[in-house]
Image (cartoon, rainbow, N blue to C red; front, side, top):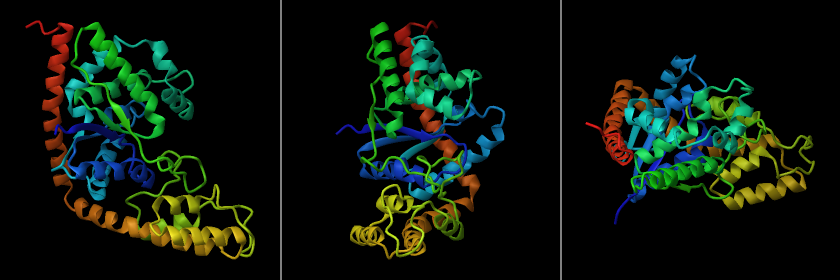
Length: 337
């Protein structure tokens, strides 16, 4: 059976948090270990530079932190090709060819880009590289002929733009070189984790996350400060479960569903304090995070080996992307010599 090909990754703008874990990392490890996929996992440093070009040291430092997080959650360089975007020259050239097939109006209509531009408050000062990063993403995906792309629901517009580019390229150049990708989405309701402050999204920029690298004391402090029901003032008061971040996390990460349902019933009826509830969540999160933290600390003892792993993965990825680029050049007709 021919294996499906996966391309996915993260921007290295800081360490990864449990929102990344539940939204994508857990899925990647399961897909990798199934044996049914060839996985290419990219640390998207060029994409991160689109809005951090004046702080390249942040990207350089974060790149190794993201690599540590990957290894800590169980991504295995023997099973998955883990590589660095900027080390694959073919990706930039593919982006140049694809840019000629996309209009500025179409880029401006991309809902994901529009929302991110608003979130970052660029106003009229949107970096050109940021505006066109959906085209860069199309290059990343098509360079490896990925037909499966694990993403969150909010990334579907990016995938649709890639499919449009693939169709346009294959039609204009009478080619079947490029492959249309499909999204692989988390189970309904588990794709996006709210921040500990109750904000709809856990985000590095909002500093409202629990990081995979956080020590046990930090995790406990963050959980004990977590948003619950502001009207649940006394232990005996009935409380709301819906919109209560503690229960959202228990639903996402807890394994004892009967116990969680019992806590919900007790909270709604009154008689369960927030402190007791949060202590239970601390135990649940530590069961998940302690082994990840331990593995991360072990890998961090030899950062040279982590760097070598990225170098080897990039060399392997480079060969695959270069082959696709050769086919693209031939389809366009720019293989002159």
